[in-house]
Image 1: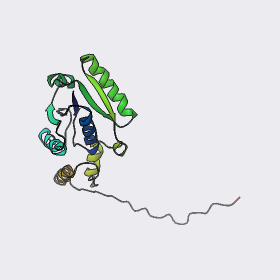
Image 2: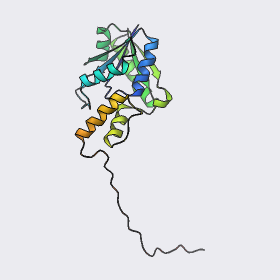
Image 3: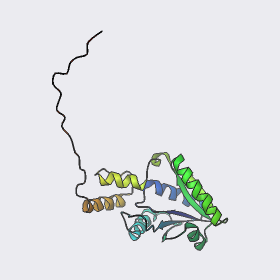
Image 4: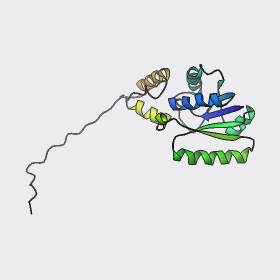
Length: 183
């Protein structure tokens, strides 16, 4: 059985990789499909993301990496897959993912959506969180594979005026603050 794991993966995180690895044990083949979304301005190009994912999943022989645009359901049908693989971090994810699963089912009754609960250590993790931390100079080494962390750091070194802008404000103490009276 073939499963498609679609997403933007900008960048791919250890949470994504956890879902991919676990999915690779459940399905004969997992295709990680990078969505080309013209409405987003990604940190990495589609080609860069494909290479990042390939390098990160090279130890999984039944995982392929591809990209697509348009409806996910059409891509799933084109690849002759039967399952959409999705990770769930929180209840808010479930609401959105369930709505998408129901919508996809109206477009194709042949495709099932399988949800995997994210491992506890990655329940907070998203690509947006990684980018925000890196943007302000924080370490993302524990959130993404080492080669991707390096690329993220290089990207923000070149695109940001300051890696870790910290502003402080000095507050002058008030003089002669009257003590409260005891009653």
